[in-house]
Length: 117
Image (tube, rainbow, N blue to C red; front, side):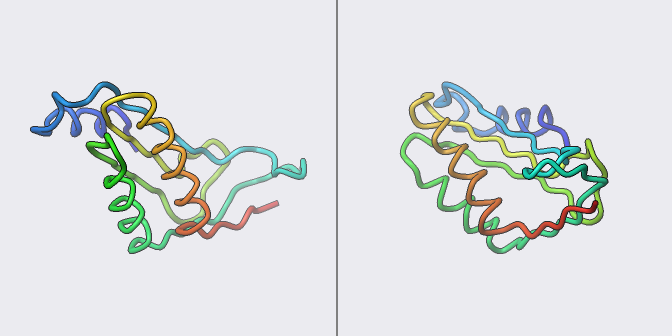
């Protein structure tokens, strides 16, 4: 997973001059579950069709130029990268909410995960 590569891909778009910012998210496997238990790792899978649908929806939002997603599936260890999302658009007022919506929807609609203790 390489956010710099994703950002450089956005910079090569013909619509890039319309961008005022690029915001990104890099999700990693954390060492503790939300209930405080120590986590040894995580098993992760994604629904690829749902990811593509979410990307299409986010790209339709006002001011959004591009949405890129990179995922890592399978058994992952603490500290491993799980998902990277980059959103380019015209202003913070459009890009930050689009990034949050994209990440929230990816996690709730397209991700299956099982923490390993």
